[in-house]
Length: 453
Image 1 (tube, rainbow, N blue to C red):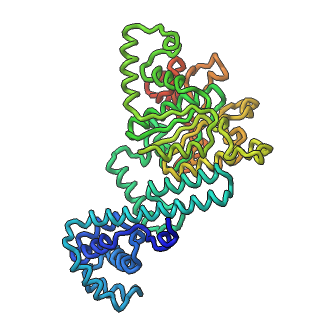
Image 2 (image 1 turned 60 degrees about the vertical axis):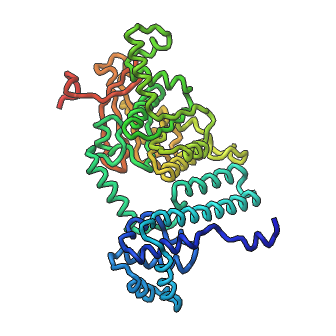
Image 3 (image 1 turned 90 degrees about the vertical axis):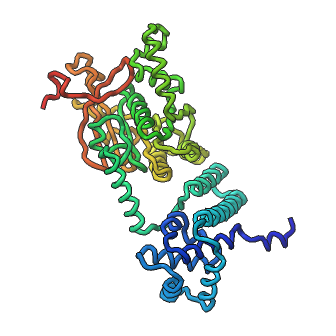
């Protein structure tokens, strides 16, 4: 390609579409609500078109009358007036065939703006790759973030007006009111737990902590299946300990209420085969995506999740098995506490970036076993580092029968809310069914002699 062609090439834009959008707004102010919801001023390539749209946008925000005279007057007030403005505004109106197609014109302007953003991202990625700063993995991660931000129509950073933020919060409140669930987030499937932590909320990092064998994976699967069903969204489940087949077997056992041992041995009755088929059909209708790669890092998970459409929840089982944020040799000597702290921080960043709840299992240290009261505490978080700082909610699992086989309350579990940025802490009783490797809500009214109030 000739050097002259490169120098004279213009960024993608459509002067005709930009003029048609502005002309439609000047001809018929009723177009404004639809256009304002689609276009930002930065979507316009021409500085003059951008200034006129900024003026109209501001007038719309303050419920001012929008017509050629008022727009020109507000351009003077806003300091964007030029001597050619009256002639140009008249030209915009004369060149616009009809305001009926304004949304089609806006779509062209938005498409051209996205093309320019893609070109800018490509140039930035090329510059990073040529400079080689941070290594190939970091450049790849940065490139994926840029492309993901374009796909999601988000900016990776920047200040945002409180008015816009409040509008989003107002929409959340309105949705919760219309939805009737009383929860701003997706239900976990455990009503008592939901009432305290307000469900699973976007951008939250939720930690489920316990000793090995207490049921972290079981409750994570319960929550994943319920969330996938209720939200009708995709749930990404990253298992660093168990295989896909093991997880699927647990889901089948829990859903069909058939003993997991019977499923593994194949000793299933004809009636159970029917229940098994129904359970498999029910689970298959959900969009639960499972990756059982044992060497994943947070960056790997984040990259995969960016490509999942309609993502609603990310589940990771479990934190201590995850790879460091960087596998470079310079980090090989770092102590495990710092590595886990880095992973924890990156998970919280991932939750905010993807704008979905991230649920992660975490193993407790043996510190609780030296105490008379073995219920988990925040200080028991193994290699805690910044886990308790980064997490929005920390849940600790405890079962008496784990330590005392002769307990009067076998299979009764306590889900202890150790930290909760959205509400109160406390304890919720659940029923653990080991034959199905599943947790269910405990209805105290039907548990004679237990938890009477």
